[in-house]
Amino acid sequence: MSGSPAQRKLAAEEAAFLKQKPLSDVLAVLNGEGEETRVVGGAVRNLLLALPLHEVDLATTAAPKTVIDRVTAAGFKAVPTGIEHGTITVVADGRPFEVTTLREDVETDGRHAVVRFGRDWKKDAERRDFTINAMSLSSDGTLHDYCGGLADIETRRVRFIGEADRRIAEDYLRVLRFFRFFAAYGAGEPDREGYVACARARPKLGALSRERIRAEIMKTLAAKRASDAMTAMAEAGIYDAVFANAPELSALSRLMLIEQSLEIETDAVRRLAAVAVRIDEDAVHLRERFRLSNEEYGRLYSMADRWWQLTPASGEAYAKETLYRVGPEEYADRVLISFAHSAASLADERWGALLSLPSRWSAPKFPLSADEFIRRGVEKGPKLGKALAAAEAAWIAADFPEDAAALQKIADGVIS
Image 1 (cartoon, one colour):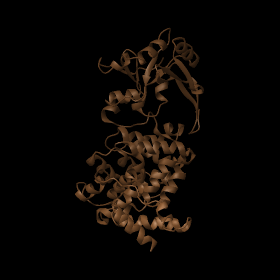
Image 2 (cartoon, one colour; image 1 turned 30 degrees about the vertical axis):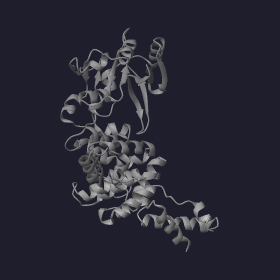
Image 3 (cartoon, helix red, strand yellow; image 1 turned 180 degrees about the horizontal axis):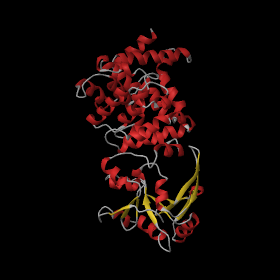
Image 4 (cartoon, one colour; image 1 turned 90 degrees about the horizontal axis):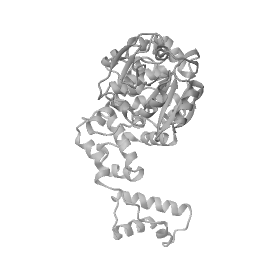
């Protein structure tokens, strides 16, 4: 091996997760007999930032075949999820671990890389994207830092490894990842070298698949500094290259403040609507541009539907009608988008009352049936449909009455 990394032995409590099963068992199986396996990437970064460890990925000097042979002999399952790039998913006690053989890029075209396997931890670290993602952790709790990640963790700086232009040219998705990681982990302004390199590379984003772009954008919007990241993307010309429409940056910023003030759970689709959707055509545009799921598109389209009419000035009757027609989830989406576009105080009680309506009032089911009008002589077909629609509109206008006398009056009025 080459290189002299900065090393630090973690305190016992910091490294305690390394002793927990099934991770400790997988490490024990893969270590020894001349091979070494370490925890790498996001798990190390999150550990140092005191954030949850959602996934634990491993890197190893062992060749993919050796990994498969060792883990299967130990009774674990080996799934060759990316064997051409040296990745085996090891499933131990129902928990998956991605295990990747050390490698270095031989050839890249901005989308795909040709790699060869190796045993050099420094070279493997240097082929990664950002310094904070390039650290590794041995099973004994020793932290290895080849690229200055520890210093960048301290200042929460998202910085490309080596030359930013070169890292980006290896995979143009790193332009969007730069802003996504800045949104999730960065502090202050984006790293200047990385920011300028990303701006230069924006014409290359067209080579990326819509699915990959969508995944990065949604993760960016879910992050705690989504508004800052979107603002930086807009100033660099990257927002326009990705979205191809004008951003509503103030609405996104306001929505995030509302979420924080009212302790509303972060929602990437709602934030996407705030920054990029004003009318239904915007939702249609984003569905094609990002290959959105039917559920995501449906929510965006609903939020675009006359959200500007759902305000305290419209009155509770209109709010009740909207809640009745779209349900509590879509109603909340529309109110929040409308609130985000307003200039009202975050503590405005009228907006608070509008948001709390679903907890104060449950929309009843329309009580008049088709049979009711058939018995009154309305024939099946378009006339019956019109009668039901007219009765429902009258029922809503009467504030959703449920007593028999009021319903009788509504039915009589429709028939007459």
